[in-house]
Length: 255
Image (cartoon, rainbow, N blue to C red; front, side, top):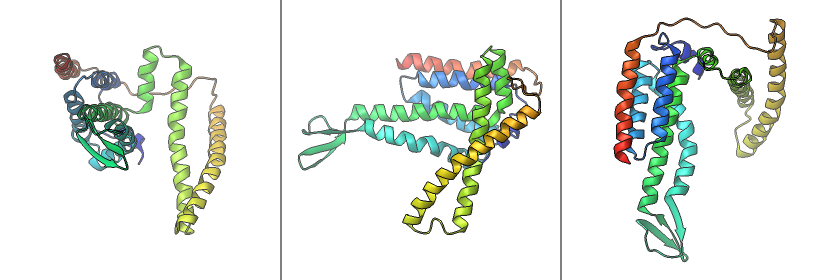
């Protein structure tokens, strides 16, 4: 699944990157500052609709992407929701086993749900920006904001090597699977350890090749990219204001 291909081929590719960045960043800040679960839920639904219906990204792609942070968030959420005590007082739902009570306090459950929705809402804002805006255009926006060049160059290189890392790992995994490397549990562990050890060496070689390619193209310490010029539409700014003001008012009322 190449996120870059969707960033270059979606229904919002002609929208100015400043407008998309402004919408995603303001919405993410509003979502993270939400005192109730209503605002993050609205943000999650809003971004999901924007990605799937407005940008035209397939729903299965977005769901697969959201499952990655969701799996990590569930671990944190469960530790917040469940408590262990020697007494049964104060629990909303509980089960006692050998003198220890494992259960859920109602305020902890609300906090866990709030944490989950707020995190998913913020992640959906980042996915909206990543799936609709190429990295080169995001770098252009950051350069206009006078972000130091060293930071933007590191972003470009890290972003590039994420895909190099995934492609190399997929190739090695496919070669191992074709040789029955994952038939049993024992062989799976052995193949996985070999994959990690081989991955380090191959990625290092890829990094050297990338640097040589950049040096052959007169790399002088600054990565320059070409971006398309997009028209600025005032209508989009009015739409952003129309979305953000009700969310901010909802946050203020929720306090």
